[in-house]
Length: 362
Image (cartoon, rainbow, N blue to C red; front, side):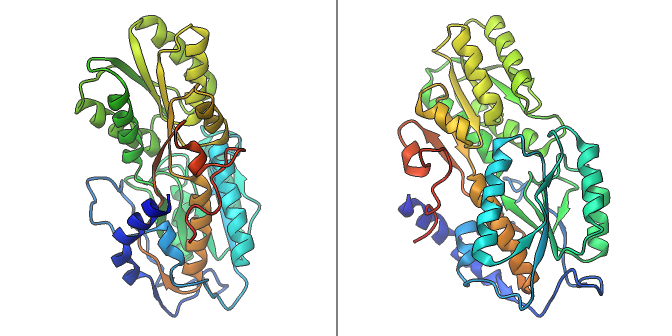
């Protein structure tokens, strides 16, 4: 793992030049700093190969950030009912301890489909004097009214949801989500015989993560000898994914593989396949959350593509702290993607299903 990590770090070494120190301060009572920049983060896929970026492990290369004052960061994520965001929360809390930074209570909507509730929470958080915000918008537009007010205050905005057209932030911390889907498609292509029927269960329509992962998956399958017979929406929801999987297994008795765009849905798909007496169906998910890691270990889920949510949360708070300290951070802090299978799971995850805390150290 360390050799792999070091190769990825070395490939981005040139981007360290853009992490520089500037005389700035953000979110103060004078209304922040007018030098804070914002950008439409686009999709960070093949359409933006030259997006300025730094890999997460390289973010710490300049040493611990020094702010000269207490820092408080507001955090609003999608929903803490999803283990992915629970892992992000763990990473943020670890960074709080390591960096000596305060955050708000980590806020979220009750579900990942309640866009209006998330916006209302965000608008309430604006009443607090936060130095920066970490946001995971549920869609590429639902928090835009709130983000507009943050821009007016010149407060840095760290986006940890999928980037997308029209979603403006100072920095995006996360993976190239097209690669999540592409790696899943490649795994199925390598695992299944040519001509095998496969299907996908997508996330919430309008979610950039759902769209990008589906784009990557279809690209990989289209370039292989697999036969994509269906694409259904599961809305990130366990029960909906279970029902979609039951339907797919009934409609396509020769179905050999299913890609689910998150692990909540993937474990539901695996359950449906098991109950249908179809252990031959290869199930692949995305996220790398504890329940899916357990399912990979016991063979129920063949693989999951993880962007290491613990480290996404950690590097998001580190990026926010560095911005408040006056450093200039590239537009994209990239988290690495990794295919996790039964053969390599113990290399990356502890027995409880969380990413090992020393993966990107040393």
